[in-house]
Image 1 (cartoon, rainbow, N blue to C red):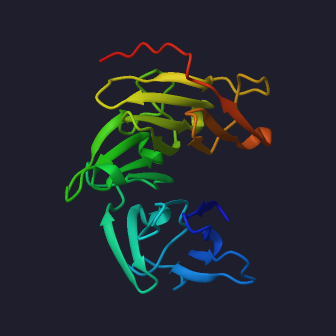
Image 2 (tube, rainbow, N blue to C red; image 1 turned 90 degrees about the vertical axis):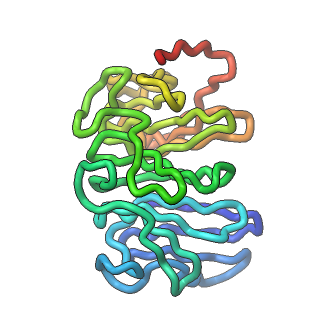
Image 3 (cartoon, rainbow, N blue to C red; image 1 turned 120 degrees about the vertical axis):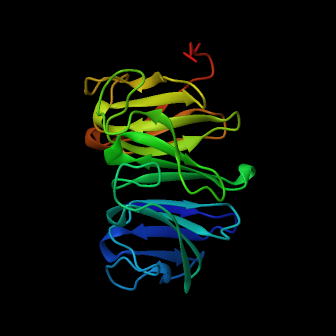
Length: 237
């Protein structure tokens, strides 16, 4: 299991990477039901290959999946209908290299943000677009500069349009305004460690209702919380 989500009705969705499927567990259920994948390893629209990221909105009308080893994003509308949204293997504007995370901005007609992990960038896909736009990082460059990323694992967005990136290879969390040429470190640093202000290969980041950043600090075996409400950001445009 590499991902979990809960919808407004309390149903739990589990991304089961090893079995290439998503299962849904209703409240009180003793067994889950397969709602995406479960058709063996493959690259057809109705198959998954080591999926790593998942996004489910509150109404759970669609399940969006980072189909990592197929280097693409797929959307499951029901257990029998899947659509390849975008991607194939590569470094072009219409490609990914093993993407691990994604976020769907439902308030902006399902604009898609993808942590294109081994291209070291975040790609934004507007509805109906045939190419993505790099909004953070540099394609093919793993670096620790404020304008760079290294193996980003996840991306999420706040209500003001800013994105938060789990910069795995740099042991840090980045805050990035759309349109900016660089980001700001809001948690961790390029040096891993166990201090409260350090991280060690974090894998996921979420925002709580107050806007604080919650981080899965994976190799430190802990969850870290970073408050950003009083922090002053200086962004390069």
